[in-house]
Length: 69
Image (tube, rainbow, N blue to C red; front, side):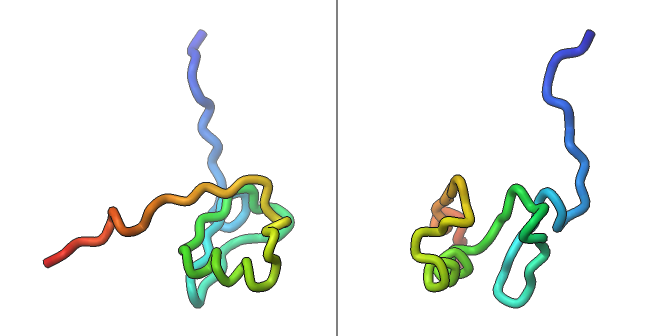
């Protein structure tokens, strides 16, 4: 018997989706994990200040990903 995580295969936009400035690939009813930019998260707070649509929010610092050339 094998132990470990069972992979969940999903079409983007159903269980897992993303939202960027001009593109929303998610379903308000079915999406469980939603990736978005910090700008889109800020925009969500303008509509719903308590972010009541979400049960958890994880923020990853974006400045650590910038590259200076």
